[in-house]
Image 1 (tube, rainbow, N blue to C red):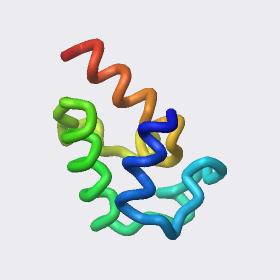
Image 2: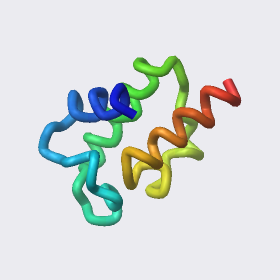
Image 3: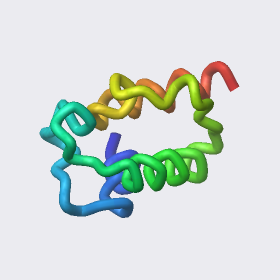
Length: 76
């Protein structure tokens, strides 16, 4: 989780990824932030996030993003 938080904070340090659970639903991330996060996750974890996985439930919290990364790594 610490590695993921570092990746996320490199994208934007204006959001507290350790506490927020509704990043998308509450409008805390812009569409540009989300694109940057997807790119950063792809690079950091050697995964490719398909368009079908780019849905709010996968990006509403750091915990959800970590679950997505872990699942894609296992499928990879």
